[in-house]
Image 1 (cartoon, one colour):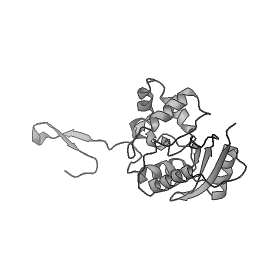
Image 2 (image 1 turned 90 degrees about the horizontal axis):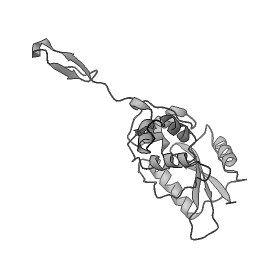
Image 3 (image 1 turned 90 degrees about the vertical axis):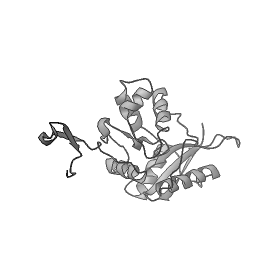
Image 4 (image 1 turned 180 degrees about the vertical axis):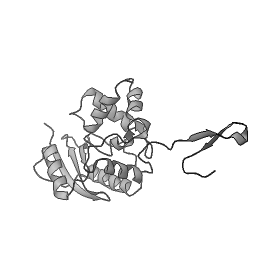
Length: 206
């Protein structure tokens, strides 16, 4: 059994936790197994990641994990990072969930996809609900960016971290993206223009 360790670290969002597995081979880097977003208190965050990781107490992170922590903190300060090179350990995930997580990791910072779009990208166009279920179990928040996946029409969908959709909205706002459907365009016929359509976004005076 691979030994697992965890530690807490401070970010602009609050106290986060990270857990990693060691493979006992100096040539193989430690792999991230969990990334815990802040709970209501640091103590609650630690309690949750200790329970989820199975580690008895926190440990000093090895160099590779310390670098991951620095990158997470930079990202949450709007110094955006590409996390696709970080080694993750998804041994507890099934084959479909792994495919969902791999597809989610390809979504660039500042962009979003819908559950349906992710399902189509996986060749499973009717599996949007299954995609959502896999993302709700995502163990490595941010590095596997489930906050970038929305429901149809740009609606928020769900988010299982503490704070729910408010946390999801905050993470998207940091990256320059927003929750909610795109603005609708109202159209009406203007008799002064020979009945041609006259377009204007809501709230904009003509």
